[in-house]
Image 1 (cartoon, helix red, strand yellow):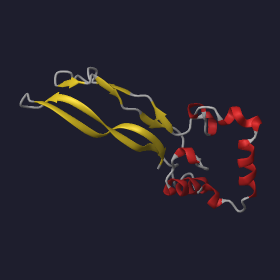
Image 2 (cartoon, helix red, strand yellow; image 1 turned 30 degrees about the vertical axis):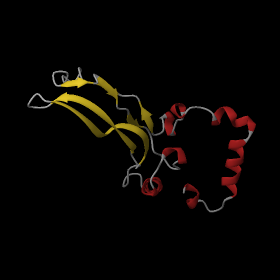
Image 3 (cartoon, rainbow, N blue to C red; image 1 turned 180 degrees about the vertical axis):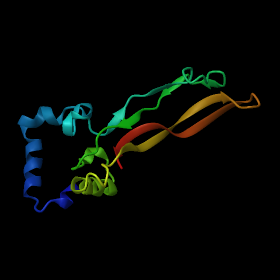
Image 4 (tube, rainbow, N blue to C red; image 1 turned 135 degrees about the horizontal axis):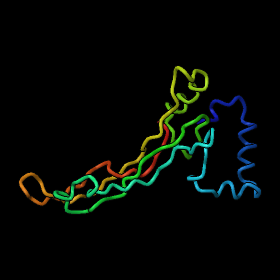
Length: 145
């Protein structure tokens, strides 16, 4: 989708060929955790976040688990947005407009694009033991919105 804004496909093919060249193998195999945007800031990606129910003071009613890996999204969404950033079409256009009017339009935001559920065993207000699957509790993927 980013190539939509380019005047010709020539540079795109050149860049694609450079990415496949043996001299760039180390760069292309680097983990996304080490990818940096402008000014050395990391690009939008998923980060570790462990939610400990004891730290929240919830162990008086949460039976299990004692916590879970929730993760969170953080990072820069700068134009051009790479395909690994899971950017929406709106985010791509917003990033382009931000380049032209940075004071009027903010950059796209890094946010969860895929979430999954986690099950929690707990006591309800009547002291009944309940097993409930809570939707949208674990970040599986991040992207620019």
